[in-house]
Length: 527
Ligand code: GDP
Image (cartoon, rainbow, N blue to C red):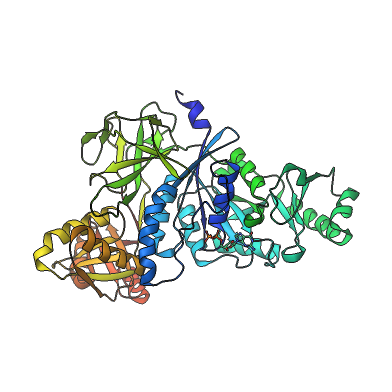
């Protein structure tokens, strides 16, 4: 393998969580360990506090900032780690889902007080679709959280994954004393704001060691012995192959804000997390170690300065070596492009790079040539698969307010949907444009951007749809009949795929039952 050395030192992952569980705090601690930042507070949360238009300008500003923080690259113990940021706000969930297609593993943060929350559930569904390896970090152990056994059970049940505790907490809240490492059998005592230096770790030969009683007290020592006996009996050693297959998730307990339990997790992460993985395409599996370059665009970031309409396409390198100023084949456009200013993301600063390897993310300046899912190669024609579109949850009709600007509106909405801001459906037999989004905020973003970037004024009219399902069938006639019969509730997506727009869950279930020859899909793969 030509680039084995580079590939074997790379780990590309994302931290995911329900807002407020501690993703930003944990990210910051990782960067501190990696030496990418020197002080706490350097990482800005990309969170939107409340749902209000006043926050909208904040999003705009934050989107500007978040280009720089979209990918954070740092080195830790000879490893090069690419940490991809994911927006926490649910209205931008699709952006997060797509980012998950560009990583090789994830760290899931769960708040020990709140347990599994709505967003955690949805994010894990995406991980399960792709069998992404997951490490769980149970955060905020310094607060009075749920019983640890109950919490593990809740996570296993709600997220449908098997867990494997790597550390075990001694109490929580005010009585939190630290964690016992089930793997190397050491004790790490908790002190608030600790830097988690090595001296905090106490080696104990076994659990019968009297040091344990001396350090945490007889009662807690007895409880820990009891807990560990139970856990060891149930879990045994971690099987890292099962972790890599996405079947088992190792679990750590800690407190991100106190930098407690973070380094332990990071050390395990670099040991077990996957290096850049092989990837499926429409033609064949592409091995990360192949000599020839290939990669795909998973995110497009608009420049919100209307004077510079440039966008940045985020390309994940999947195989070979990406080089500056070399021509690459844009499969969809069947055209060759080269990039004179590709940049990499070293913490918060942008740097022009000369080359990049599998696992890396490169930012490419784009004047409108890229769509999400586009593939670049050294000439071979294929697309990376498994980059999904999710069924939107809110539907509105796009109404043109200025007939003189129809062209601008058409162009604008096409480009915005290429960026993945929203999905566009056209009703059969009419020209009604239906915009589907995951959250209300996205409609505000669209309206604002159409006006400011394309001078096109629009408004939205609410539509009574509940879900869009993509339809397929082996029986084309049955599908055509269905679409004709359900004209007001059907249409096509931007790429001409037929969709059914259901008014309610009841309607949807009825149609599914009445039409056994038609498949209703809740996600559509771009390729
Ligand atoms: P995000 O929305 O997931 O990015 O969450 P943040 O990292 O912004 O954290 C949300 C809040 O929880 C902030 O006020 C943090 O200071 C706080 N927080 C993070 N980690 C801990 C922890 O271990 N213990 C406690 N008590 N608070 C924490």
